[in-house]
Length: 291
Image (tube, rainbow, N blue to C red; front, side, top):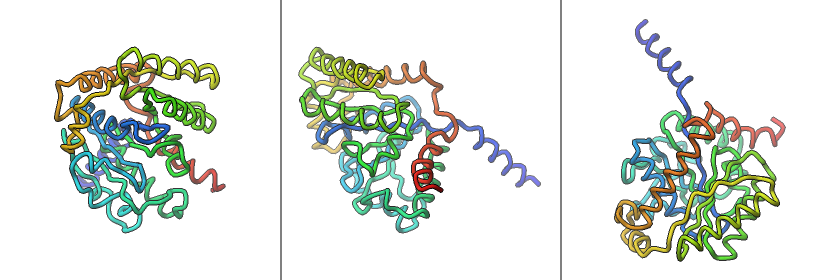
């Protein structure tokens, strides 16, 4: 009777436990520093005593484990194709941030059979009960292999740089996602700006364009400067916030994360509604297949 009572209490706790907040970090093109920002945002959230999972979803080209100076022997492909429990592909990085490697054998999630899709959904549903935040470091652009995540998460942080191609690609990506689901929330960061003025000009220009042509509001988080500490940290294979916490870029990122948390708290509760992410993620696959 005691075992049954404990199981019932655990079941009730899981039922009413607030699910992890889900966040995707994306860019319209590669080479804008997206993964670096994702890693360091995860560290900052962990500094605030949040349980954070960083999920490298740049399928086949993931580099989170490289930037962390780890090997990441097991990846999401091992979970899906080799039936390895999801707990065994989770590694621990700095500040107790958990992370999952993208691997290089996971070519296209859309082509997975229904059993694999159900397994992935089940794994993510389990993880939502273990963490406060799940951060998806996405591949560049909005492709068929990552669209289901982008359409399911609570928030999307878009990374751009002042380069015209980066700005254009960031807008195109937001447009593509908005056409699929107009309810998505976008937050914007300008990385590698020469100065604050240049970065804010880029952000405000994108905000105006999205508002005018997509009839959608986006939220400006701030500007990260071009900083030699980032390159040094990459060579050391250590996150810049860990290696150089007193640097200008670390200070700027602290302000950006604080601003995001403040806006998030005003717009919604601290966590997403129970199973919202999983519900949307499941619908992406099965409703489109008429199941």
